[in-house]
Image (cartoon, rainbow, N blue to C red; front, side, top):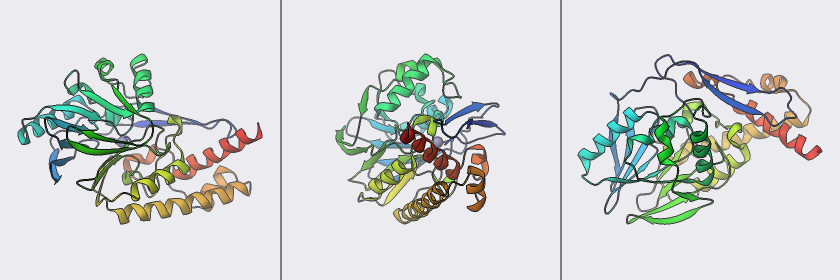
Length: 312
Ligand SMILES: [Zn+2]
């Protein structure tokens, strides 16, 4: 998700020329999002694991044997630099690794704050997205600095992979396309903490945000949620906002599965998108996310695209 700060305006151009076409969502920046560093706070979680509250998106830091592993570098280089200064007050160890939960600009554009040569780990589709970004800096709607070319992921994961990173056991999970097709959840089994980015961001509303332009999927989201809920974890750090419990996420999954079923029932009955939205009392997303398509809109389009594919 992209948060809007300081009166910024984001226009989501929803191309639904025909529901029988694969839909395209495009983010277009029309205003300026202001970096905010004054409210950043590094919070300890457990045994060398920290998260930073405030800023635009959440960042995690894990202190390893020789260095620090960072998770998601924020949207602005200025915020990422402030976070690096704050973590340097906690440990003298250098940040050697950055893991990306997905490729949205509010989670990757701060990368150039990190030292050159830092290892960048991501799902392989995030590498593809960043390579596209390097070739066309406007392709994510919020152009990062040209320096992003030095931060193309150096290590990629396709599915789920267990690693020992700088002495820290880490499980990287990519179950299916969900929020995007490059989602990666980072599970720290020793501390029972999961960083899951916008796979679990509740700030967007009761139901998940699916980026159809990045090949996200509501069914894949259900599958991915089940995978992270099956982990022996106590704390879930989302892409934005407060820490979440397993119970909160279970309720979110249950509500979203029911919602998806309701949308499918109406779609199968031949209802239009407008009729489906009206029957299900679909409302715009909360606050700053109000200009993003709703779960009813994206799910309806997914079902339409699937039907079109089957009919070909
Ligand atoms: Zn986000």
